[in-house]
Length: 176
Image (tube, rainbow, N blue to C red; front, top):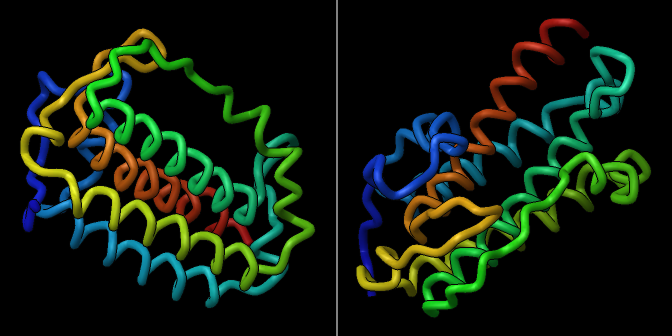
């Protein structure tokens, strides 16, 4: 199958995904996902409990909640990629990430538990994309009434994570 998964063209994704995909600067998606996994695990383990549960404003998520949110989004984007790679033309529903946070009970979990789940999710994503050939990567489908390619969904996973890492650095760690 594919050894290198290259950056998608702008015609492969909707405007609403542009910021995520442009944040993912990896020349190869698989290497980018693996490098990001290693960085996230080491970064999260370097934070103490106070930082992991800190909220920079009323109603904002904690870092633990952000990490679980990143996993939720990765699972949903990977699921979409699988369906589109298999040429499923169903318009897939969107999701309200805000409705997922409270029920996740992320702040009640240990960081090691969250990171073990994160590593499993990431490994599953890497294995899924590793086995997509060019025809599969170029398949498109519709999610939340927006057309997107399988390749673009992979880069959206990586870029979404980078987006949230930047928020953590800017709004959480500079404040604590």
